[in-house]
Length: 444
Image 1: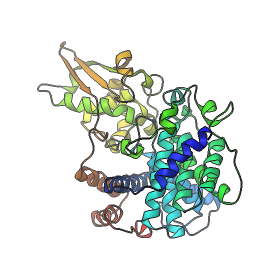
Image 2: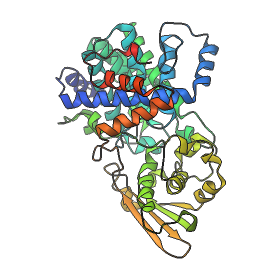
Image 3: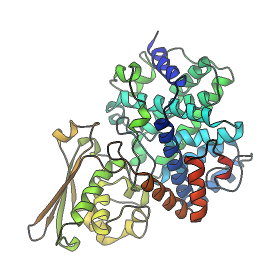
Image 4: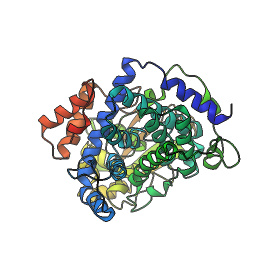
């Protein structure tokens, strides 16, 4: 068998597995988390999303998350992807540097509604979608990210295509054609991280939509190349200078969805170790934010040129910046949605502190990636005193997971941000996390 068939052979084995109660619990947790984040995200960009529907003259029977109007299936999938990634609160995987749940569930939920999919099939599609996108991304890092690709846009397209085809019960041959179509259409640039850009969630939305369309092309009978991964112009050669074949084809005693982290803070995951270190520093007796002279952050070199900028140009920019995240965490002791929005993002005191935060790459810390993404924050005061903290596994990593209570608290805060009542939020959370056959039609 060629590389693609050997990779998909693993996916098909997983397709036919019996999943443990822990795996099902994790999928339900990630599902509820994604819906909560999408509800909150949709409320923040509701007017723009409605404008998209109007420009598209979209009609249909599907409601995007957070909307009352109906639209086409494709438009609902696309808007779900925008909403689920807009606030930078969706989950991810440090090994693949991707956010797998947002694009995957953005497609699976509306398709499950339209096709009256049972939970057992939804679960199978989600597990196979996760395994596909996370394995592909993890096998190509750090080269894929360093080359300027946005892994959520590229690799999650493949995961969505497989997840959709598996959930809908299509034959393995159709799943392969869906995967093949995704391989030749996946794209996305990290240019979305720069200056005033608000297009990072657009990449997530396109991954959901492209993955869905790849599956539809396959089901319609369009055959793809038999070896889309390998060869001089295959997906892997185009997207990366090197890859780990064992991650692609090797057997594991775990599923890659077990490597997913969740995000308690409303900023890029690369900022979270620094945020938590700042929270610890604030607890020191005698610490005074007004007496800070400078801040030094020592961390892995992968963030240099992408997340070390100090010129903050709005909310999207603030969420991507380690210096701003440090400044806001030290100043407020918080890092929620509000702290990465107005008036904070234009506050002169905060921006002044942001410019006194220096990011220093460390070869030793870089060698720990992806097993650990460590940050050391050292605050020097005007009187010469120094405070220093190190964080290896910020809250939400598999090694330091959110508790059930913390997961519910996060969901509740997201739902309330979206304008839902606490009673409604609790009902949605229970529907997604405990009901044998969750009814997605009742969610929003």
